[in-house]
Image (cartoon, rainbow, N blue to C red; front, side, top):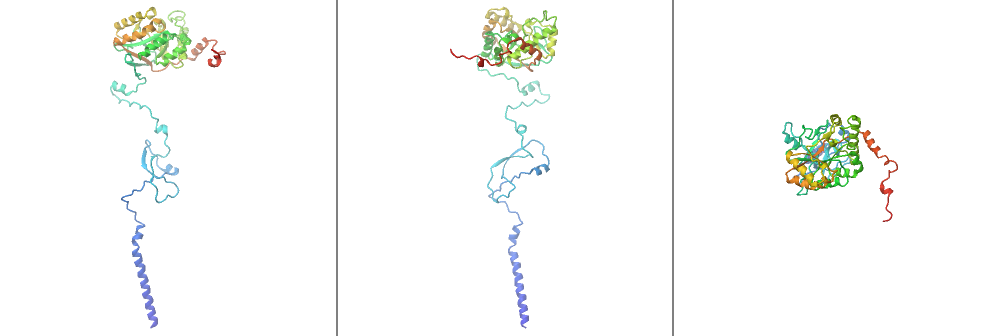
Amino acid sequence: MRVVVIFIAALFTLGLAAFGVVAAQRGNAPILASLFQPHAASPTLASPTLVSQATPAQQAASPARSGPVTQVAQATTTVSDAPQPAAAEPATPTRVAQNSGPVTPDRFNPPPGPAAASPAPAGAPASQQQAAAAPAHPIPACDKPDAIGLSRIVEIDTTGGPAFGTEHFKQYDFLRDHEVVLTFDDGPWKGNTPAVLKALQDNCAKATFFEIGEHATWYPEISKMVAAAGMTIGSHTWSHKDLARNPYAKDIEQAKQEIEMGASAVQMAVGAPIAPFFRFPDLQQPPELIAYLGTRNISTFSADIDTTDFKLSKPDAVIKSAMTKLAKNGKGILLMHDFKPATAEAMPELLRQLKAGGYKIVHMVPKFALTTIPKYDDMVRAQDKFSNANNTRPESSVVKTINE
């Protein structure tokens, strides 16, 4: 009987133990379930966005991106290979480049500068196409209210050697009514050329100077002054020889040398490329030499109006000649000489009368610079037989004032 009681008591104890385990499991069910369910987003705190940095191997495995690099601004935290604390501090917004490698500044972030003009659509009117092109030679601002200034700048494409000046060449008459191009021959010359230059600068005007090569070697500082003022510089032979006469008329090689040495000398005096513009002395223009200039892509310039100032000794006479011929012609490329004192003296008043008469100044610039020929550069250097002997040191190191 005792054995039966003990057996029943053991069964009862086991039953109570089993019941307790089940109850315990039921009571902890919400806790266990929470380990496998995502947390709901907090209505008051937003977790920072994590931006992981792909490893080089991951980057290589990822498909290549096409198109421009995009810069994306967003809040990030730094993610490294080491474990991060559960509660990270908010990160400062960072600009992230969404590409597989570093941004190349010159490809994707060019330095700031003037925006390029958008091209006009195909078939657009010529006026729209001109407006779309950024001007290579903008007209400088003029702060002198009484100055004549510039109304237009024209670019001359000298390819093939086109010729200008209706006195001899009628095809390219590019000036409009009451437009004037100022040109000067035979400089640079001490005193006269600087006076002409000052008158032009005082009036915000520009001109083209056809310089004699030999003169340029005598006064290179004046050639540089003319160039620095923004004037256009062409050439006018080496020594102002009439190339339509002998020996040049019979010997084209000698004539070419006179032309090319002049161009080389002027460019060497300026110290920078000059315009491929050429004017024949006395406007004597042998056809074979015009053809030769065409092979060099150098334009020949005659004139529309020759003021004949080389014959005039009074400034008033120069002004009267220019204004009378302009009134008859209505416009024109004016031929004058900065070599002549009367012309230099006449310039301030001539510019004043041009403005009063409603004339406008047009400035010519070349599309391409002149390229000289080394052979003729050497010939110019050879003219100065003693300059390269022992005079290689600067003057300041050779001559010094020790008492005054």
